[in-house]
Image 1 (cartoon, rainbow, N blue to C red):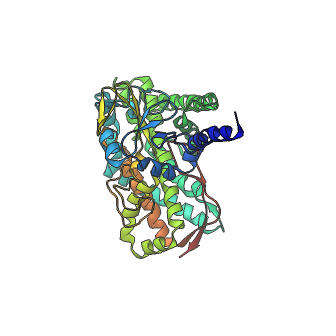
Image 2 (cartoon, rainbow, N blue to C red; image 1 turned 90 degrees about the horizontal axis):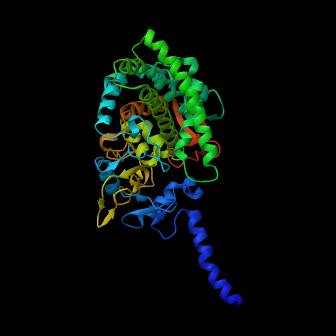
Image 3 (cartoon, rainbow, N blue to C red; image 1 turned 60 degrees about the vertical axis):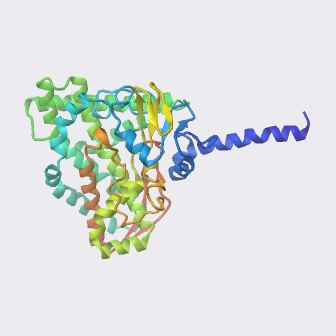
Length: 416
């Protein structure tokens, strides 16, 4: 082969390698686990939005929905697109919990805990929220620079969900560490690191199981008014079995902690990066609720989840066949330019109440109101006491393709 021919034949291979590193091959293929996609999801979503229709996961041929209307409709098609058949991660894992169950069991499980997440129940937690946030702002104002994730975005949701679950304050640090470990399971992909990650996740699950069993036994003898006591009572009445009791408690811990931490962190990044918007918010505090909704749309703590097609599922002129796995990219839907003008901009008065950060349909996030209230409490404390937010170093983001947010956020607060 001549040098010229070798050069010509090498070009497609180099182009393909570049495309694979970028998470796409032909514009319609997508790899949620590609390093460049994890580092910059919005850029990957822009590439997806350049093509209509259904995309494919390059690793295994699963189907991908990225447009707002597609994802919205699929999230509500729970009779066809199952969460329980093979779970919601790329590697099938059908666990006995609310997130990975279908009707009618899903409805039964949701009814057990719904009373603990009403507006009235959330209102009862607001004094605790305000105290945690006020203490965090005290600490951050007293220092030249603070890590806003460690000081604020982590302590608030873990304290609130632990209180709802009836977990003693002294156990919260361990709970957060175990929760971080469990969330690695949402990174599950067939890769050289898969077995290592799986072993780490299993270790954290086992440690939480030991803790929970001891907690369940104590609450059987001396129940309280907390959510875990209610679940234990359901176990005693036969509504839940032992496995469901544990996985239910685990899901509430992780979902109530990790997602809100990432939401608050992303919101702080956006506001610290745009001093004019923060100044306007201080001048117009009625925009707080709008900022919360825009933070959910723009930040999208949950990037996407899988479903399993129980029958052929029609998307426009294309058909996802029965048996196919389908990735619903909520974060991509929230940045669909057909739905939102300049979707990559953080616009404080956009008020996108129809975003899909909490999903839609039967799996709409149980703790949506709780997350909104926690985030609003943070905002109101900041605009009352902090004149300016300033990024004081590079932001480090999580490397999880499913759950995204700042891992480290150096922030300088200027007192009002």
